[in-house]
Length: 608
Ligand code: G6P
Ligand code: ZN
Image 1: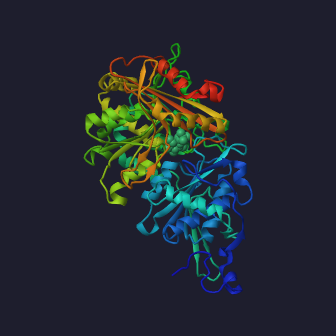
Image 2: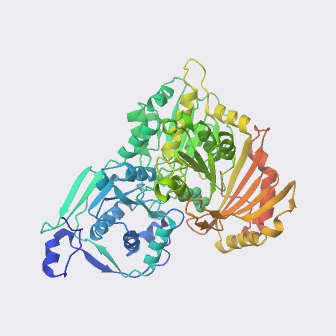
Image 3: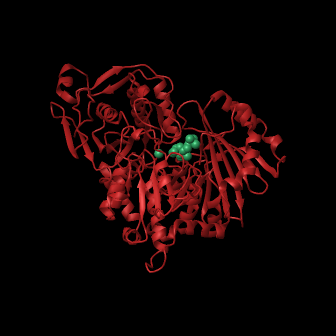
């Protein structure tokens, strides 16, 4: 039996150390570095900070210690490593390989070229390998949609054996370890692995007692194979082959490019012309790889829209029938039709209403549960009520959905799967993995379009047709979000504190034409494990069902970002411009929070 790499059993004498050769473990002394507390999605900092002495090493060691303390035997199974291709990814991967070997990991899988999208990580953990090789977890090197490059952001997050982000308990343990770390383990002599080539490098100790393998794996295989089992690719192909249908996929120079090519060019036979910005770049080509109307400028213009989602005069230029985009790490999505923007909240509702057209759901007896984050509009609530799904309203952050998906498997509770969930922040997905999945959302939309367009002799039913039909049936939840990025943190906190202090006195008040039925700070009690999440957003719930919500972002790079969410439900009048329908409520919201007074401006940096 092989002993874990770098572990020297018995007394550490010179012979043992020499015997280990390239697997010799060096214990490097270090000291805690402030601020290594993971946020909503892992630890994110300026790249320069991550490149600083011991910064990455401290965090990775703290993570290994916490993983082992949680009872995981890292010598069994595999550790998966990959990232979104941003600057410092290759160097970080080599460091993690050397540290993994020194911490007792015997099998490491690395995505080819270091690339793995966040949903692909989740899929690979869950799907790849025989039981004894299955990944016990993964390090994902990404700061998601934040810009990349030496002057921009870098990030690292850890996902567990179920494929989902580390739960709070684990991230807290990691953080605690970063505050009292005194050394880290590394096999400094471990050879650099060529991550550009698929294949396995095996490193043996000089005396043959130990061996560590690093396998460079296909970035796309596990994920794409899973998606092929979720959707009917033949049906989708029939839609894509219609002469009156055309599409474009903007990967924004993030990690999704190779996945788009694999699915749409290799599997579905489209020409490479559909691939926009599909070459991953370490700085995302200087762009902001976030799929929304503001940042996906090129796609938005191509689809005949302005940054507010309004139709633009494009003369007789032919506009594609379908446009979509992904963020840096491929978990977010934006869906567009010809001159038509689908808000993420509406996207979730439409997908839920047609879910049973998708083989994954149909085969399991139909969709059972749906969930949305609290600030996401209530459009999906109406579908849930109509079709009798379990419905959950969770705090912002994908991890809250994971517990619901694993309720039965991990907690012995009720089974809510098959399950669909989504967030206003352009995240949509299901329980096929434990992360949001941009590619899944796109394929879900194409499946739905395919299922209503099987007769090629009839005119194409478009994205806009589907959404307007949905509004006719369920009414429309007009929705928008204003972001105030990079504002002074003290002032932002003061603004939130003031609203929090006034929740009781605001309840029952009339503001403009609205009566505040409830003002509160959202608290979530997890129905699966009973854990409580407090201070999840100030809500003003109006008597007519409209809502105004304020949160501070948990993913802001520097300073603070205030998010203001506006929602108004209209049962009948569903064809207004969102900006017009919401103007009155936006005015009320700005007055309620005192934006001008605290922040000095009412002009948001981004509107979505
Ligand atoms: C990440 C998380 C999402 C979350 C989003 C916005 O993408 O994975 O679950 O909705 O960040 O978070 P924020 O705290 O910035 O509003
Ligand atoms: Zn992302």
